[in-house]
Image (cartoon, rainbow over all chains, first blue to last red; front, side, top):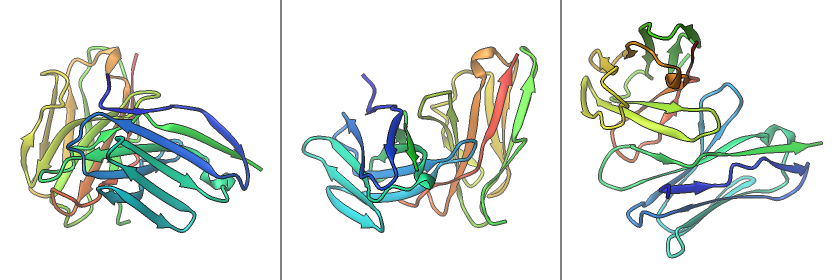
Amino acid sequence: QKEVEQDPGPLSVPEGAIVSLNCTYSNSAFQYFMWYRQYSRKGPELLMYTYSSGNKEDGRFTAQVDKSSKYISLFIRDSQPSDSATYLCAMNSPGGYNKLIFGAGTRLAVHP
Amino acid sequence: GAGVSQSPSNKVTEKGKDVELRCDPISGHTALYWYRQRLGQGLEFLIYFQGNSAPDKSGLPSDRFSAERTGESVSTLTIQRTQQEDSAVYLCASSYKGSDSPLHFGNGTRLTVT
């Protein structure tokens, strides 16, 4: 079993839809949770960074962490064609360095 | 440009040849990381540098892989006697300090071994 599981999709939605992306994990030591967005032929760029449980909102993006269920989510409101990309979840244990464990990534397509 | 720079962006090589991949981190970033991304898969950690020392090399797949870093500057990842399974995108990232600082990734080197 992988430490981080993420449905690879692809996920296709119409413009304006609410998108829900999810990851589950097995290591209860993880405390830092991140979502990266990766456009084709580009490096991942950090979207959201959350410590421990709870919600964090930034514009149209909301990240949720439920440590009791070992489940994290990213919600995208009012999705736009420019949101079409691969979304990678990543996580890390505290006290060390950024040896991030990544999910496989979910490919999202938002069509006009 | 202030981002992480990687070269070459694409590399095609024959099986058995050696390749060298280069990473220029963001100026002032002391931590540098190499990750590998195979087609349709997440990123796999390869090696971590703090300054020019590598406290964690645990992700290097075999002794054909090695990396070095000059001070807090350029890093090179070398793959000797390349195999077809080495085909992947090799991503470099840097961060301001080792822990709890977000990673900034380059656009990667797409390596194809024929």
